[in-house]
Amino acid sequence: MVNFTSFTYQMKREILSFSNKISRKLSKPDKKFSADMTYGILASNSCLLTDIVDQLHEQTKKVNSVERLTRHLNKGTDPNALRSYLFHIRKWVPDQPVIHIDDSDITKPDGMKFESLGLVRDGSKSTASKTVYEKGYHVTEACVLTKNNHPVSFFSEIHSSKEKHFTSINDITFSAMERGAALFKKATFVMDRGYDDNKMFLKLDELKQDYVIRLTAKRKLFFHGKWVPATQLRNQRKGKIKTPLIYKGQKHDAYLSHVKVQITASKKDIYLVLVYGITEHPMMIATNKQICCKEDVVNVAKTYFSRWRIEEYFRSKKQMFQFENFRVRKLAAINALNFYITLCMAFLAYISMKSETSVLKMAIIQKANPIKQKVHFSYYRLAKGISGILSYAKEGVRLWFRTKRPAYHQLCLKLTA
Image (cartoon, rainbow, N blue to C red; front, side, top):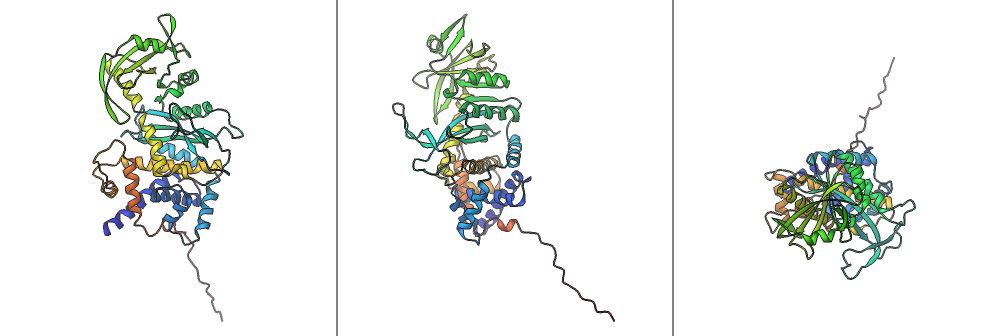
């Protein structure tokens, strides 16, 4: 118990130090709110405000604490906090990082009072033969891989077509691309078949960024002076480069091939990389990265297959912090809550970058009691271990923000003759 009391103190200090870096330009009430949200979400593994308040151990009534948090969330995400967050995560990534952009959904099938609630495709219920639509919101996420190959989000927006000033999902995707290009001078944007759109290629060319995008079967490419279906080029070739690749958690022997082509959008020379032996139909990947040797072809394929990281990011966000189980109703408050969940995910990435010999990190993993010693995606065990250590806390983080009052000066009366 003594050790866990010590680790609880260290864990609180790490969380508050991280939170203070993000909120350093905010007012004191907003700093306290940021610390309360970050600590409460990590301690409870939940984004429900009632669960967060339970972990704060405040003397006030629960309903008053929930109203206080709701009032702050309704203000939306503070631009200063967002800028500080982006400034800090830039230090965690390599010089030319890999950026994954993808869409997800939040379903609220029983929701009645949520602002601008629209219809979304429920990815958990839909299959290849049946599409299920539920009430909910779209989520556009852009994650960058850190130096230890873990995803950290730098763009996360919950939106709906029912919003008054909504234009299109493409505009939101373009905003994510522009933020990525502004943060990192040169990056490689990795996207799935849903982004096989001429507008995406043109936008990335405009931003002078590299890309690795999987093509659909409908795509046509310019090859040897004429337009041909990409599937025709796929069927005319065979993979000559053998390499092991991990797909959906399993290791496969893939066979790769490549050919220089032109895309419909810009008429610029790009490469079509073909991946055989993994799926029923060979994968077609378009890239503007320079390919000079076999290693370059393998690197393009590995870069695309690293996109399972953002899939894991979405899944862990929903499972660890009950992302779909929020109760705030205003869209600005929902996005603000999403920002603080993103901060907690970034804190997990920050802990994952600590040395394996770090005493605190070892205590977190020990408390998580994992079955496997090593995993490629450590967010689950880190979140479980942090919550377990903080469960020993009898107080929240309010005492770390003591109010400084001026010294009391007693009134002195002097008697004169």
